[in-house]
Amino acid sequence: MIHLPASVRVYLATSPCDMRRSFDGLHALVNAVMQMDAFAGHLFVFANRRRARVKILYWDRDGFAALLSGIDLSQAKRRKRYSRSSAEGA
Image 1: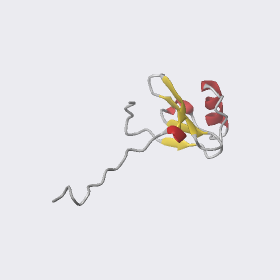
Image 2: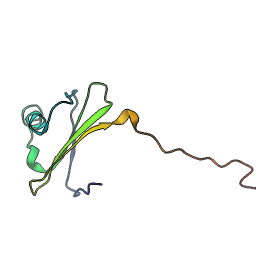
Image 3: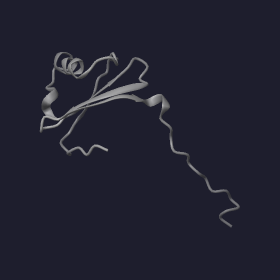
């Protein structure tokens, strides 16, 4: 789990991104397309065309870069909700 300061903003790219891009490619997208500074300490989220996979680029203020890549949203499972039957409550 990554603990982020309260000042961190999350920016979502609205156009699809090639999931083969690395740090440098995503950094170039942030600079050229979003016209933002990737070193500002915010999260930049990129998704593929089907919106099934995401990559998250994060540079903290200490110069550490994190690229959370290949998060497959199609395989994510929801927690089951259990309902009580009427016989249990009696």
